[in-house]
Image 1: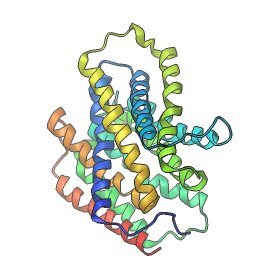
Image 2 (image 1 turned 90 degrees about the vertical axis):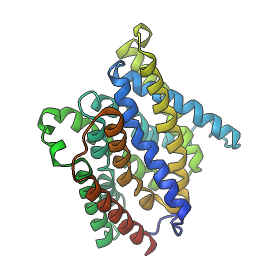
Image 3 (image 1 turned 60 degrees about the horizontal axis):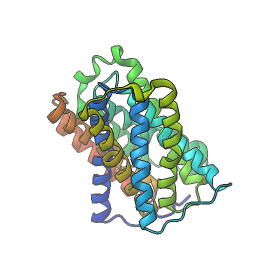
Length: 299
């Protein structure tokens, strides 16, 4: 099955992939800053509210019309739950237990989940050697970026790791759902998912955290705003633009670069040690991305 929008990748597409990966990857850093001062559900709600406001303004300025209340919102409810409500909450919860760099590497498991879900959704799709090799090599590179020493304490952080992996699985399922069921313009999907997530997460935060009783620091509030603007609104817009231009498979390449930026931020600003295999991991990540890209051009 040939993907819609799977055009030849250009230098511009690679730059957009790197920019989107950097933005997405920064979410673990900002959430780690906020989670020491704010409960996870409040962070998730604040992130979604900021993103919904910004993306709503962008969509309005571009003349994008959101669907009228009715059947067209049903797929947006699903994609909003899978790619925003569940991941935002689980990532914030996970960051209460693990380092931001480890969160980045675990979330980079999205391609493996995507392959599994795609196989279910498209049983006739050929699972090529390039695609399998690219995913395996890319994930091996992601593991090497952090280094084996970072995984030694994993047994004591199983809850955080499990929550982050569940977030990755949900996000991957949302990507496959978008590919199979969505027939709306990319910008409508981008705005719709956070517009769905913001009120749901806000109600959840109100019920669980009573955020009006909290007294967060200015840094925590700034981190939540940055998570909503830099790590959510900006990459969501770029992500759906990439899907429309080069297809979802090659857009998923950015997940291999996300942990690189997570590790850089964690190392430089939070003092987390990525290990001695970082450069080897980076080479493997790029190799995996090239294999997946090559596979897309064959279609």
